[in-house]
Image (cartoon, rainbow, N blue to C red; front, side, top):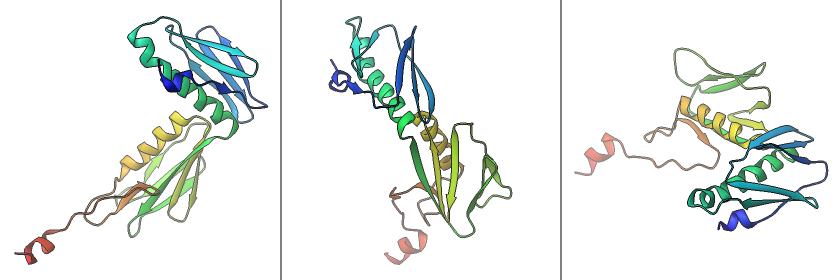
Length: 181
């Protein structure tokens, strides 16, 4: 049995959690989210708490136990607080701007790269920091990874898009190697 799966989830004030068939519906001040639950897992909602239980005692059910609890906890946190990912742009002439709901990146290509956001995701740009925010953790992190993939940080000069606080290991170039001989 999973240690994470055993923990109960407290439902904060202003959040409503309902079970509709094989889906859990979480409604809160920041929107409504849905989470499908596998048949091996059982959800029990009582006294302002959510319990995630194993319905069938199989290896697959044990593997899904902690995952189902973590996904459900993220949905509840998302409708109350929301999630955000911060990305940093490094490089001369590299810029980001928000046009409508789209993020426009100028990162050394001959063209601008335009990334569209869904209705529940919001972009904010402050100098060289891009903030991706929304209520669904899965969508926010997936979109942040897509933005980073446009121009990942390169190891020689460190130019590119990286997460704030991410450390990029730098390599020495040919010049440094030639002087050591």
